[in-house]
Amino acid sequence: MAKTALLAKLAFIFGLIGAAALPVGALGHRLGLWDHFMGFALVFSGAVLAVLALVLGVAAFIFALSRNRPADRKPALVGMVAGVLILGWMGVQYSKAVSVVPTHDISTDRADPPTFDVVVDRRPPGSNSLGYTPEEAKLQAEGYPDIVTIRSSVNVEAGLARAADIARDLGWEVVNEDPDDGIVEATDTTSWFGFKDDVVIRIRPGEGGSVVDLRSVSRVGLVDLGVNAERIRAFRQRWQEATD
Image 1 (cartoon, one colour):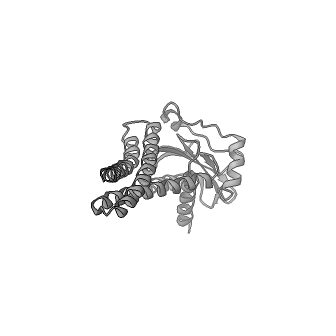
Image 2 (cartoon, rainbow, N blue to C red; image 1 turned 90 degrees about the horizontal axis):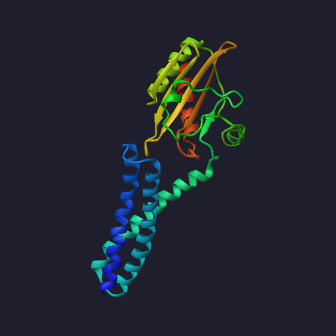
Image 3 (cartoon, rainbow, N blue to C red; image 1 turned 30 degrees about the vertical axis):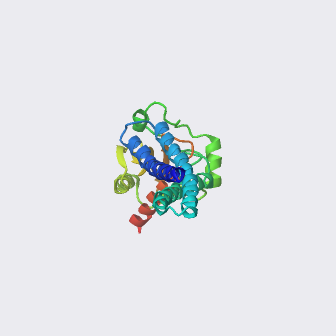
């Protein structure tokens, strides 16, 4: 009898702590309390606790039913549900990771990607390299063939102003507007962990107006879960809406 109650309590406790570990790990990184390695470690520990909560919860629930102990069913059920929800969320994240190409640097111009200026000194030590390699270009071509240069009828000056406005509308922090180099630089913060991703928008004269190229680079992580490509698509949609 005591063993059933203990299993139910452990499932309940592990489920609650595991569920708390996910937002705590992310929020702590977002607030600057620890680095992303610690944040990921907390999330991983939450997944381990979820497995324990699920296994112990199932065992406790079966014992509680067979031994007619209704008081132990509720904590066991809570642990089971928490474990399923946590592992389900982790499964979704894993599915995203394996469904996208393993890159963190996306450019609309793979042959001549836009380069950063002011952003370079704003990136902390240990950030991903800003070198765009042929391997990354190949991966991007395979995974995101739709990410290409935007051709526009607006001139460079008007385009730079529009680019900065769109960046701000999307919630990016614009850190540089350089009409001489024809670039706008910005930093976007992800919603979950608060990761900083850097963006440069380059506008050059083109036939009938201008050509607009973007590059979005994650500061940390080898796989961006498709975030950089989605960021460029969001900008492209806003640009096209403004043109229409």
